[in-house]
Image (tube, rainbow over all chains, first blue to last red; front, side, top):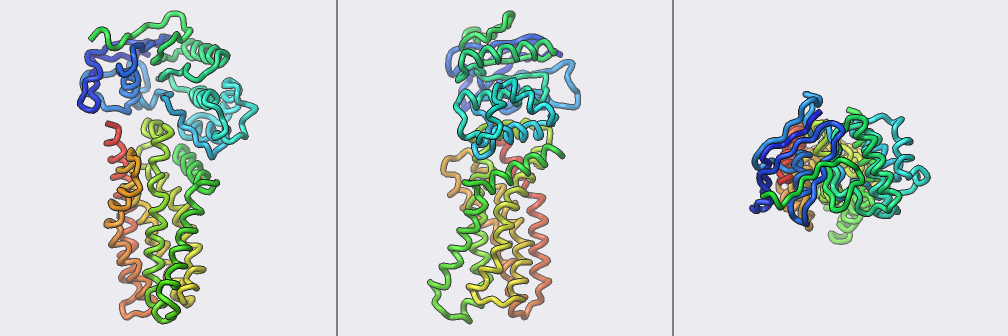
Length: 201
Length: 222
């Protein structure tokens, strides 16, 4: 599987955010998107996720399911955690697993991997920012999708959780997945390609 | 289909929990209708005559009450992004949310209506006719409201815009809902004529609402 983009441009609110962005990521590879604030890291991820219309250029996926769009084969982990405070931790994860078409049997394992098993019955409104982020990450584990689009996944996580996420990303890559991640720090993944926005253009 | 079922169950669950819109809508309905006899005075004949209109107006306002949170809540917590990326068609996702909203806010009104009818001196046949018009007409209010909720999704004070956008569109439903209820009570028109048109309005809105709302949500992505 190979996800590639050629000459992508993004215009938001009448302003050119970036132009002429190209990249190519294959199964088992990671693309780290870096650059200063406002340079369009999140916009680039949202374009790949199909949440912002492409102004120019194109994105192609080789070797994926031809019946599905790129967005339908991807997980998007944005700044917001897509959790409902009125529902419990388990109910939140059960909903996304059901909605995204995963198996209910994966839920317990995903909660354990995220270190939230003991909190399954707690309303999500009581979770800390880091725990909310971990519950969001559990969604990526409960439903298998080959493409992970992560927007600063390490923010709000403590050192132990960051290490755990790195391990999960390694597992995902080993299973033939690919990762696009916006980041300021390091992802802890050895051979990541780096796409530096705001300098080439 | 399982995706839509999961969404339906989640939205109903959120609606009936503390802070959900379900109970607020019914309470608002009760308060508005209860105020009318105090304002009009104890004129039983007058109350009986304007009863269906009062109940329909109150139901219209009550169904608008929780509508502005329908997509805005999902937009704020990022759920809407994932709904937009879904493998299920967005039109059906929107329709499932509309159905859940009607089950948690429209259905309780229908259950409460006969009780409230007593306050307005309605007799049992009139109440039965009224419940029937509510059952046929309130889904139209919700599904027309979907369009306004989708258009105002990203606005901070979207509730006001929503009311301005949606209320004019609900005028036909109001006219034929009240006409059918009145026809059953006092005649001279047969009940079937306005009631059939009310059903037609609901069926049309069940189709147009999700498509228009989905188109509006896609437009918001810009």
